[in-house]
Image (tube, rainbow, N blue to C red; front, side, top):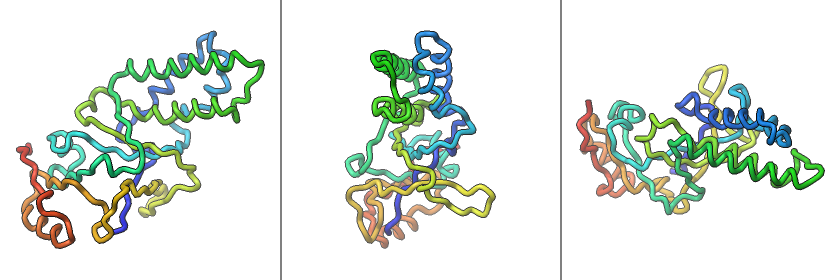
Amino acid sequence: PNVNFRLSNSVYLNDPMEGFLAASILSKKLSQKKYQNLKPFFHSFHMSDSDASPYFIASFIKSADSLPMWVHYGARGSGCCLGLKVSNFCDDLYEVTYEKKHISNFFSDIINILSSYVSSFPEVDFEYDPVIWHARRILNQSRYLYKDSAYKYEEEVRMIRFVPLKAAKVEDIGELFPKIYWDTPLQKNRTDNIGLNFSAIILGPTVADPSKIAVALAQRGYDSSIVKKSKIKFR
């Protein structure tokens, strides 16, 4: 009850190169003479792996019951997959693309539009101009909507939120560097005595006694018909 879904800071993403394709695209643009009018914009963009990113992400998958997901994320088949209806989400969900050409074309379009915009004025305030500000935010957020094609099987969708780091929450895990996160209720329609109103609960293929779990969930108020065990043969 009263539990929220957690968005993790982008630094915790499982693909160590994720987000840096954008940086490589912008670096190439910076070296081109026709984009020299955007130098201040490029230099203010979050480009280094040592930068502190203020973006927080929650990831979801479309394929609810697939072997790779149980292997990589489902506690080797002993966990569970929780289903949520898209109509219950408060925030927008964005599809992840696995095509490098798609994200490269998107970034190029934004940069071309921005370059034309800047060229139409004798002087532009790169820190406070609203068009510049929105372009920076679009690029910073969309950089986290691309993953390498090796992850295509995930069919991932994401929620991305900008949160000033000083406003973010800290999970004290007894280490020098605590985990930084942000809470979001995600759902419009909560069930107070249950918490998040799941549309499906799929128990992993290696769960030993699913009937005991189904009974416990039913006692807590979940509809037993939404509780199922994966049909995948785990190996």
